[in-house]
Amino acid sequence: MKKKEITKPKARTTDNQGAKNFTGIRFWLFSGLLILIYTFTASYTFNSRVQVYGDNTSYYILGKALTEGEGYTEIHHLEKAKHYHYPPGYPVFMSLMMRIGGDGVLLQKYANVIVLGLGLLLLFWIACQITGEKILAFVACTYVSLNPSLLQFSSAMMSEVLFFTLSMGTLVVFLRWKDRPGIVPLISFIVLMAA
Image (cartoon, rainbow, N blue to C red):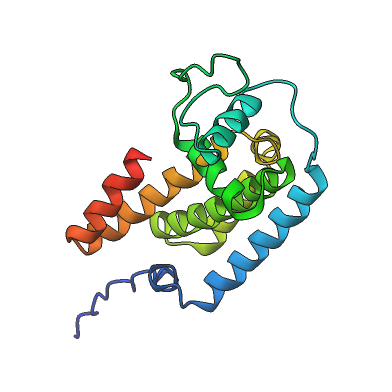
């Protein structure tokens, strides 16, 4: 009498390879769909007025001071005192946007919306890496893209959006560095952490 051979069940394969090298068709399909959903919701909730609360006007004034070569000062006061309260990361970003396209408030708001879209794509990549499932990562990132607070911050001149995107960039560099250690990814990781 022959013994039955016990076979191990096949390991479940995931479609994570496309997330690792950005070549999987499903990765790009879900990325495009995520950006379409975000673009629709961001355009629907976009507020072109300056917010009357928060730090947005302070950031704008500090960015304008950097653009005009006044340094990190409060140019809206007569004495133009040096500023010590807010960190300079977001005003430097605003200053770069002012140098590129002028000092309009709408440019700053549009730049924030684009930066949040980039942050969502980075979050999608991270979620694909961690879960190995593109559908689960897509659903999770879609929920994030529909978050009312995040959408409100994206159309205001607030530093939270840039912080979110730089944090996601730091995690991407860390995950890539973990696979391929070297000096360039390490320096990128340190720079993003400092920002």
